[in-house]
Each structure stands twice: as structure tokens, then as C-alpha cells.
Image (tube, rainbow over all chains, first blue to last red; front, top):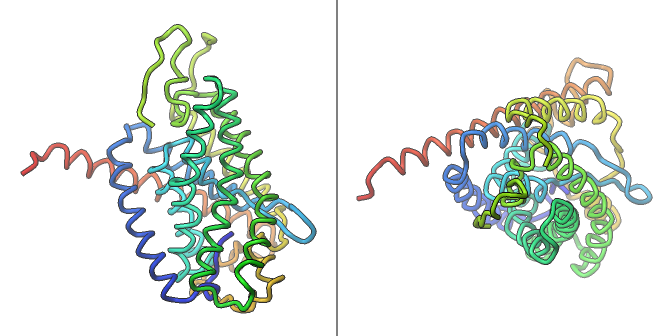
Length: 228
Length: 111
């Protein structure tokens, strides 16, 4: 869902750029405070894995493909603030090295694919996790469902940008319907992949999963109350 | 919980990187090249032509292919390897720098 240059007018893209710089700046500062030493290679791995996964376009409907956004996945694995940094690194590398996503649209893409998952998607995960029983399976289900919803939220963020500064002549309602319709399908793929990856990490090192903090303790241990 | 030995963090990271490299190098070149969700919507709604060429479109690795590598699958795979390496180093480096700065802030008595 990388926005190329030209779809959204310059003022809107510039405002998104300012929002992105602010959001990434705050995230970077917070990331430095919440991370311990082992979080450093994990953040690198998260960025590298999201980059690799974003290359893998899967077919969703006739003549359409989708790929993992990975923002919610990253937020569950390393926490929302570090996730913003990781996904932003991916987006900047894609735009600079691979001409994937426009340079003037970088702010738009950071807002849609890094900030929306952390600020809107991760709270959906937290709510689902609270509603479900306290178990690893619940973390997996909550991750998958929240990841699917996050894709639709990201597509709505694009619709909002299109409504404000879109250059196309198509009416906003039509674009909204088409974006949501397509991204519900892509969201199903996102949800499945996210659930599989979270499940694999939980099976290996549950204590490394930010979104499962408190669960990782041995069953005999007292539940640890951790801030969200 | 089982008593089997835990995977060390670095072993975990190394395993994860091997998976990422395998995905990027082996699966990446076989990914669907159909337009993605946004591209498809833009085509259907008639504004795909408004996309401008990126300023980086003439770079040596633009479009996930590598200049001088004629085999497209190999080129995409190599571009994937490059991307995995760069994102790992930059991601870890930025977070390391953020951590150092936070430690420095904490060590400085607030005025």
C-alpha cells in the first residue's frame, strides 16, 4: 500500500511529513527508554523481517496482490514505539534504495504504515487481549485479528489523505469503498501471517514478545503486572 | 513449561535473520507481481497515471532489481539480501543510538 509521488498533493504530503517526523522522533526517544540491551538486535531483526515479508506479494483477488504491512506484527513483537522505528526504517530503505513508495510521499507512508498500526492497531490488540482468556493462544488470536483490522485502518488513512489532498477525479466515497473492499481481503492474509509469526516466536522465546509480557513467566510464578 | 534450554537471544536473532534472508532471496523473486491493493484501486478509479516517477527510480537497485544482473529472479533476490542487511543494521543502529541517548539523559541531573 505504498503511496507513490503524485497521488496526494504537496501540501497534504508535507503535513504528513511533519506528523511523521514528530511521531518517529517521539517514538525513537521512547524506544531508547523502554529497551533493554537485548532489544537492540531484536529491533534490527524486526526491521529486517518486515522488509523481507513486505517483498512477498500474495494474490488476493483477480489481478490484485497484497503484502504484509507488518506494523501490528512489529508492535506485538517489540512494542509500539520500537515498531514505529522499525517500520520507518523499512519504508525509508524501500523509498531510497528500491524506489518503492515516493520520496515526497514518505511522510504519508510513515503515517499509514508505521504510525497507524502503533497508535490505532496496537490498542485494538490490547483490547482483544484483555477480552480473551489469559493464554498464548489468545495472544496469537488477538494479534491476527488486530493485524487484519490494522490493514483496513491503514487503507482508511489513505482515504482520509485522498479526501484532503487527492489529485484523482474519483469521488472519495468510491475510492473509500474500493480501498476498504480490497484491503479487507489483504487484511485476512495479514492476519494469518501475523498469527503464524507471533505463534512461532511464542513457541521459541515467549519472553521476547512485548505483547505477551506477563504471560512469559512460568506458570508457577505470580502474574507480573506490566504497563501496556 | 518444558525444561528444555532456552534459545539465546543472539541465536534467536540469527535464526530470524536466516528466515528473513531465505524469504527475501528465495521467495521474494517468486512473489506475485500483480498490482497491490492501492495500485489496483488507482487503476480502477483512473488516477494511476498521476503517479510520478520516484527521484530514486534510476538508482542501481530501483524496482528490486540490480543493475548489471540480467537474471531478474537473481536480481530481485540480491536486492532482497541487500534490503535485509541494510534494514537490520540501520534498525539496530538507530535503536542503539536512542538507548545511548536515553542513558545519557538519565545520567544527567535534571536542571
